[in-house]
Image (cartoon, rainbow, N blue to C red; front, side, top):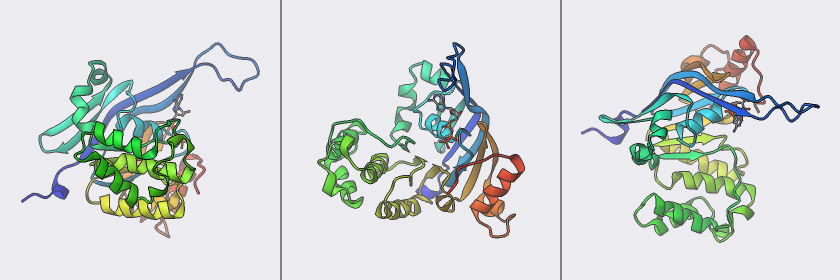
Length: 279
Ligand SMILES: Nc1ncnc2c1ncn2[C@@H]1O[C@H](COP(=O)(O)OP(=O)(O)OP(=O)(O)O)[C@@H](O)[C@H]1O
């Protein structure tokens, strides 16, 4: 019999483009009336499978944009994302799907994606406990109270469960965001700098969860934290909104003497002149 781990789980991006337009550069002495544009994704095409893919790249390379679009929290200008969840079950996210009020078409998928965004703050006045309960209800999770209580206990958040989200200390809000993304036991877990702001205990819990999900689902981590990047099965290197390199971590890092992701990434930077603020 085919187990869950044997089922195909794959995301493919085809010719994705995303450009941000905004008012002129406010940092300039004279205000400009011209719009500025920033490239988030530029004809981005590649695919990933089950396991942990770490997305690397310098500041502004498009890592957060890629995760945001893949989480369907943002609509691409062009191109498509295809999610193959299992045989005969696939979904597409694109501008036309979004424009057609595509939410019903991707609704079953939404409940199978967990996303931790880059910005780790909340201005909500709900308590941590209420917020998780409401979210569990919106996902139609059976026994939502039990599920949120279980996660609160497992992630050491019982002491601050009554606190409003906008008053939580940084370490707790980071753990809360991880818990929120796990409520629905997602098949696809998308994490933008997940270790940033986590305390030591939170990082330990996060590593345990990552180990548990390595074979169970598809995990993508955008990070500049080279210690975390060592968790990768696959590496995806981005530059100027494009995929510059993708492959098995072991094969890519075999080309550097110490076999670490940090050294491989440094070598790649040397050849392209890209710079980052890696740890
Ligand atoms: N909401 C936005 N409005 C305007 N420009 C944006 C927005 N989000 C991203 N950008 C621009 O898009 C480009 C890609 O940004 P993105 O945050 O995706 O890169 P990144 O690789 O995640 O960078 P970092 O490592 O700094 O988080 C950058 O030039 C950025 O300034």
